[in-house]
Image 1: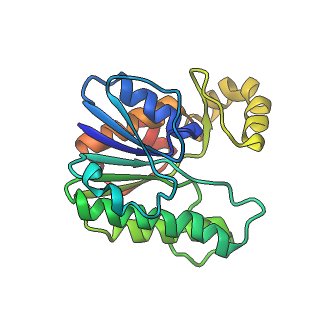
Image 2: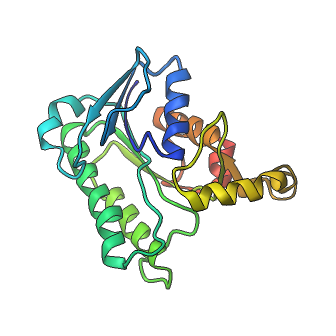
Image 3: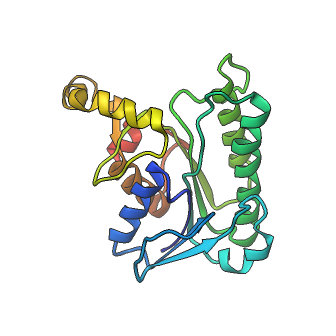
Length: 219
């Protein structure tokens, strides 16, 4: 399987990249980044594209992928709806349309979030925008598309979030994660589980297009 990965420098993307590198069934990973990273592996190639909402120049390199894992994203904190829409909905759809055109046989997996509003009419701004993004992606002509909606994600294997607020929150929550797993196992997933679940869905599909934390953990 050839994988196209967006967001490999973020917390979720780091976990997904790790699982792709470890998976013997993944032959090649093309990671689209805004600047080169220090990650090196025979299976990994980096495509440096400063504007990922305009990938026309790189279409020949994107063609032929079997799966696209879109893990890029930002927090909505402090952002207006218009600004958050631009960097969440508009950018994601620009990538999705390009991938659907050059690799229509690909499976597209988008990292959304628990609580996303598929009706697009709820009170929560981020949930509306994410819902609109999910709906638009599901309408594109991929072989299949799936929306991952994780809740709290525990970073493993030395992975750290670039978002300071998440890092602080993770440090506070860490001592309680074992208890939380016992009391509410579906409430917590890990970067490792997200990566493995993505690979499983890319290979064999899933019964529903929206995957909640319990679905991710079960996979």
